[in-house]
Amino acid sequence: MKRGYGQEIEVRWKQFQLDQINSKHGPEWKVWEQPDHHQSRSLVAAMAGESVRRSDPRGFEAFHLALLKARHGGNGRIALNQGAPIIELAGGIGLNTDRLAKDLQDRSLLEVVGRDHTEAAEKHGAFGTPTFIFENGNAVYLKSFIPPEDESVPFFEEFVSMMGGRSYIGEVKRPQPPWPKGAVR
Image (tube, rainbow, N blue to C red; front, top):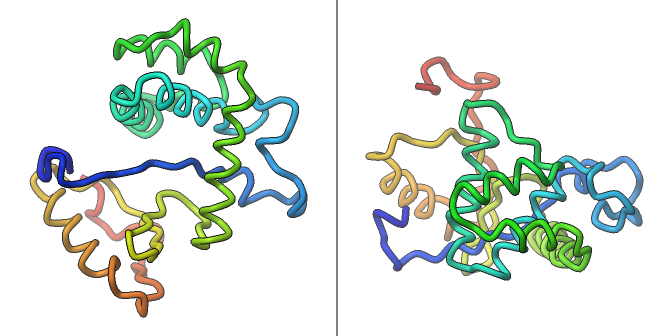
């Protein structure tokens, strides 16, 4: 999208914890308040993202993309609850790994995770990722594969056109679970 729009588009990634939204512990239990954040599926990665955003805002976008590719890119799935592989990934894109390793011990980063998650769930009704929240407050969960690069900008424009301003659209779903034949190339 940045290649298609340049700096005209601003994306502000925020934290959302599926372990929290899917918890069977009750509403008072908060995954980010638990003593061992390595027990969560993704709190270590969330802390790493906040560390990079805080220390190297320009590096955050590269880190986030590298982390998404390492998790969903087809070459295995990086563990999001272990510091070592995340630190290695950060080093591979030139980030300060000493700083990151130190920050992964800083539980104050979990406060950001908690604030972001609470806002997404309580204010916008988020239940999964990715949920897009438009400037007008409309929130939309989108489940899709990454479109071919030449379709990325038209796909995004159609998505924004359909969902960004039309709060009367509640849900769009394909009838063939989990995906229609030919959807994955």
